Image (tube, rainbow, N blue to C red; front, side, top):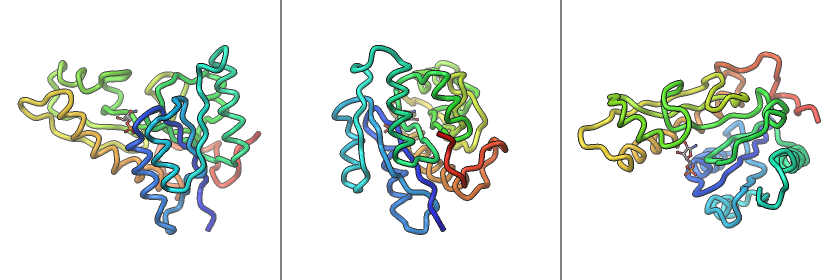
Length: 207
Ligand code: GRF
């Protein structure tokens, strides 16, 4: 069976990318990572991809006059590599509506909170400030509104007495590494909740 061709966008350390690479290293896993793009030169995630033998590209947003031209270059590279699904894994740039629309139903993100709570940045600090007893992470389809879009998978952790932003982040991250590959498997096998029925991942995306 053909494996779903995945492109991963990163900006940094790439621990979620690593979890996806590890899952895809099993030939029985229904997806393969065919390209990793970083907008940050020298991002640690690029080394992880290279070690796994996955092609990488650095597309530095600073080399482009505006968001639209940067996004257009990424779009071009993803399509040239035959990518069918884009996974955002710690990609720290906002994407233009045009790019998001072009990958509607074919782009997912991992966010470190139980959405719809705590969108945006510093989610662990937000959770601590709110005094919640449960926190976690969410894999969701990407739509033009930030940290919105149909939820595919979530994982929860307890918030413990004396937790700091760092200790909570570490507990959540361990769960991120479990649910991202799980969500990818569900999509590749065609059983992901929230999937857009108008989009079939069996066919290549329209160019
Ligand atoms: C993760 O916490 C992810 O949820 C968020 O950014 C962080 C990226 O970490 N979107 P890493 O680069 O995958 O280690």
